[in-house]
Length: 598
Ligand code: AMP
Image (cartoon, rainbow, N blue to C red; front, side, top):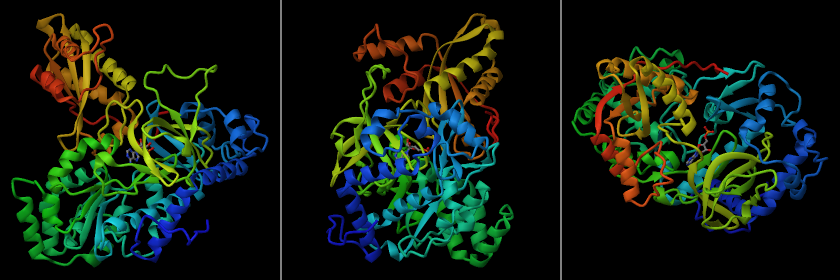
């Protein structure tokens, strides 16, 4: 796309000529949001006109908005399941996309307990790369001098599998880090990482984290920003340092690499960088052996100007802990993206987390917005939803995001609820409100009410031989521990006190619940160590009645009262915790392998 150099950018002044070009691109896209959207839709429909999907809905080659909106249904992942399964099984015909599906991206959203498989095509990598290329030019507007140092980012690849038909299935970031776009990225003084590619690409999460931390410690004075994709990831890195600083300082002192790091490419690359540095080793030992870890990030990396982590949406629960470890450093949420499509960026990344708005870039896909009414019963055939175009959303209103992508998703409901906060030129800016149907989340796991219900049912079967049942339950994502863990409050009806379930039985109930959780949860427990053992807190009889009394005293209607299946309001937590009679933790890891169960 040609960049009109005559358009003066209100996002400015840029730090360098490369940034000026990126900022002009943002201006161009946001000023022409509607024509760009029209062109994107037309491109997608023309490119995919002969696909089975578009032919099924008799689009007959039309590429205009009206035909598109009148003929194509708004769908969810479940509607596409048969097509996705065929592609996964090896059908290479043009089902959703005229371009060959290059791989599946495995979403952290699940369907029937397994990660959703998002088809993608090669050219989408360019689009993702383009969005990444806009982030630093925007950041440079707010934080000068980032070319004078480095970024300490904890980035990881995750396991990948192949579908029965031989296509790779892996998370979008794994796909990106393993791409030539990332591996052979040109040197950019504004975007230098402390982590070598070898460390980011190492599939063993311990070895990867160990070397990334070691490099971060070595370069501690050069580090200007510290980050991970999500807040939970950065806190995991801090926890890793708590557990491993002794070995790390030993390596720094001697200039050798711990034998636990066995990956040959890592050993080779670190062998060239490691030099004995007793003074640094002494410093690390001194700081890490202090009882308080308050402000540890700024103590070890004193030149850090901001944390680069997403703290919007479910990650907001980590803000107090991040503030504790960083002495309240600014937290920059730079982009909003998903496996389905990368959406947009934050044009004011140093703002407070509560004020973060993402500007959707109109060139990324065709975007529509389903007005979100939490009280509506849903849509029927007779009253189909009326979707709003990108430029027509209204400030203050909430919408669910619906996308049509180059890879062949058509009018696909992402499941994110967004609120319009304003506009940059004619492109709207959105506050991320929440993801639909998520009850509990620690890392990228998303557990909904039905999954929790099923887990409680499965676990409570173990109580039958004790003549005991679960009369009520609720849950809580406890993020005060690192990693965080699920807490499930149970009120039990024990019919035979002489034969009540023992601690061992309740521990097995915890494990049974974990076994019932979706694969993203189990992967977090087993492979990523990003979720701690599930805990059951048994509360004394009558606690849930007290909970209801409390809700009614605060204005809830007695007729409509339902037990909340997840709680996070402090007085309620305090009430529940004051009634706890016993606590039990899962004694083992649930089963998980990269292979899908279904
Ligand atoms: P995945 O499909 O696993 O890549 O997850 C994508 C989802 O993560 C999005 O649909 C959002 O629900 C969530 N997400 C991504 N970026 C952000 C962000 N900046 N703030 C809040 N939630 C986000």
